[in-house]
Length: 104
Image (cartoon, rainbow, N blue to C red; front, top):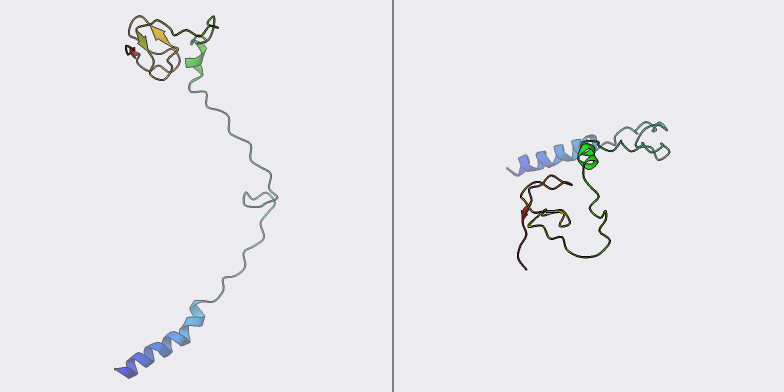
């Protein structure tokens, strides 16, 4: 049994250097490769135009309201408290459902 153990260790020591050989060197990076430090930065992608139509018909929330009072609407947008309405509906900025204003 001890001989089997010694044989296993001898085989391990014999083949260990072969399995740990160094990998071949990598080829140099092309100057246009994204991984190259000399490569130019890629341009940013165009901004999404998915919500462009939503913004076209939304009134400016601060238009004509230079004073700092709270709007009197019974329903408000949970995300945009400046968007208020007397009747239930949707926010003109994000299209979320308006919720009843909480009594203070």
